[in-house]
Length: 158
Image (cartoon, rainbow, N blue to C red):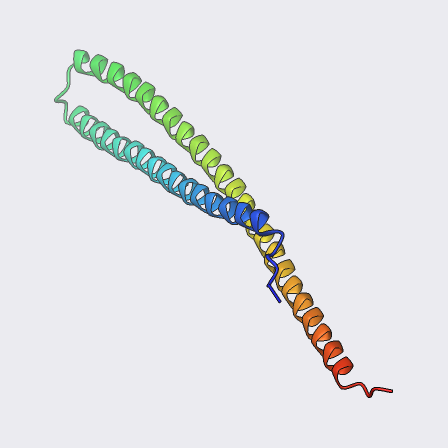
């Protein structure tokens, strides 16, 4: 008896291909999220570094003022410098916020990719289980046919 070919092989192949593709998309989403995390961390570190540098500069200026080493012009320049430092810090804060938004979007994209990968994997498993049942049913049918044939061969003749 010739073995029958599983009728859902094309579907199984399509679902396996979809699972493989969703796995690749998930890997890309994870890479993008990790890059976004690194970008956010770098932006936060840069903001903290500049804030610390600004704090040290202000302390040095304050100490020079206390020692009487600064003139009125120096105080005026310090005021302008402080305003510029605030503006720059606001710009860095906005950059940090943008990187946080980018990271959040990357996390959302990763979650969607995880869900698509899970669905694709589930679809493959459904077809695999169906194939197992189909093979078992075919084996049982073949065994029943063989038993019936054997029973007829040994049936007493009248």
